Image (cartoon, rainbow, N blue to C red; front, top):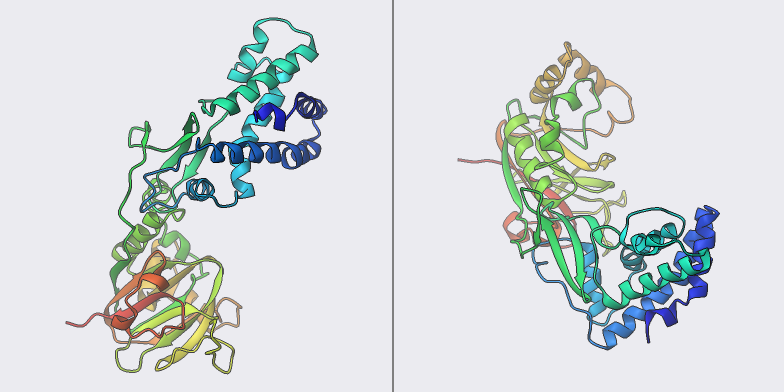
Length: 385
């Protein structure tokens, strides 16, 4: 069955009329209730006919649109968000082309000659149906673009030729090329110094100068050290350790519990919750054989481990001329976030942080004596000779 039978001219006439009134709520409702079901029915028929292909080059990558497409091609249900990224730009462009002098492909042919509005709407509808029959994306009106690979940070887009899907990435010259498989982003281990042994463990220190003191240049912060992809998070952990002398691990918006091993001196920071009922009297995840240090929130989606002397040096570098007095006063206060800082006396000297993407699933639990039932974000350990 042709796409035109799923989405007849009368349906597009309705969309064009709504768009002319600039009723965004009604147009959104049309996309969801009328256009997307028609697109889904069309895609299901294309799948049954064997015209859809899976995307390759996804190993070591995290591109949900491509993964969702492959799941659909394999026979799974389609995600509503995938239907939206496939078709919404196309139906919007088609509706806009009815009343626009745009040079977009959908509008260009129709504007070559003056036609009565009714015929003009029919011409645009015919072009829309033709595009979805052919399955060829173009540079303007139909492509799944502005995608960031959540693992590597590559800027990507998905293109179709006769419904054969290809994941494209932008190279260092910003040119598009087919994406290739990548190695999985590795876990990270990085060394930092704890010169006094007075370790602060929290999400971040909310004191004057600290944030400025740990900033990176914008080109690095939004490039190689971006928090929007796994490779950037791993690189940021290394950079904070080597350049700022602190332990850093990216988390989600969560609440964590810290545990201390009585013999190795290692520290685990894990989720407060546990799924198997192994909780302590406070309802926090209990790490059997470890001593609970305390809990704190990760409101800024990170864990920071920093020596007090290092923190003062960073605050000074960030513009605080009385860093020691500021930090001491803050830690002695009843400020809510001051209570969010765990203060530990640990062996002075070099420490190592272990973290990275999917750490709880990928870490060697036996090597660090991590109980199976907790969900660790990171491990800190003193470095011994």
